Image (cartoon, rainbow, N blue to C red; front, side, top):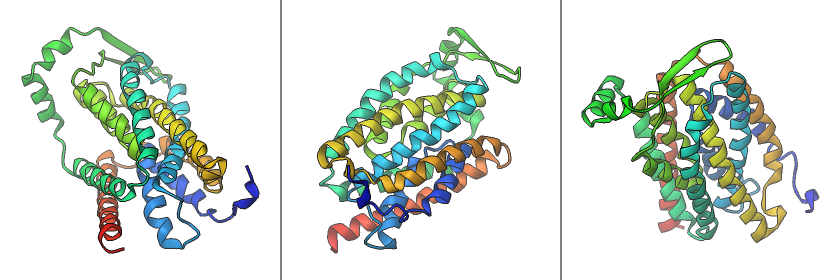
Length: 306
């Protein structure tokens, strides 16, 4: 690998940007790749011809690789707090990892259809923005679960107990995927293909559908995200290297984003509680709305007017 071909100062600004993205991701529970990929695909081309990546596969691959390190930093914090329910995470991992790898393989296969990928990403962002912006009524959701017979089935599950490092004990019924496995599979596939999805489907299943306490649900969700994203990222980076050599990976971006997200992964948990979760959720929702509209415009412009 000829590292001398890279301009190692070109992406210096990504250090503070990546730190902010990782901090926001830890506060909101949204995967960092959901914010990195639009930066790579929308902002970089605007900045000048020397900034854009070679293709979308490289942009999403680097976004996922960066997210692995950011969430790993957050994982260490949750592990120290002893809040991760490893046993409950296994069913989600068994579904998300293989399907995520399939999505990652298809990304490199479909890289010639970049505008289709951009359009798909835009649609995903618009759907996520709607889900984040609209108001959720936990009482109503719980009532619907009861009507569907989930409450009776839930009562028969074994009881799980997690005791945090601070001495707080969390007791809840063992989570069950059931039909949620479909959502997990879709989330894993979208993560491999477009860089976002698994965290957005696992956290609601744990906290809302199964009633897992938020601290345990967040910690367990982070663990699932790390494993699925790591598998998808490894597959994408390996495919890039296989097709274009080690130089196909923009290492001059990675050297700034990885250390930055490790720092941001520690800042985020420390700021937990300082910002209302609902306020953060809505803010991310509006950000995704802007991203979705922007990506739609680029896809339409490149398809019909270029």
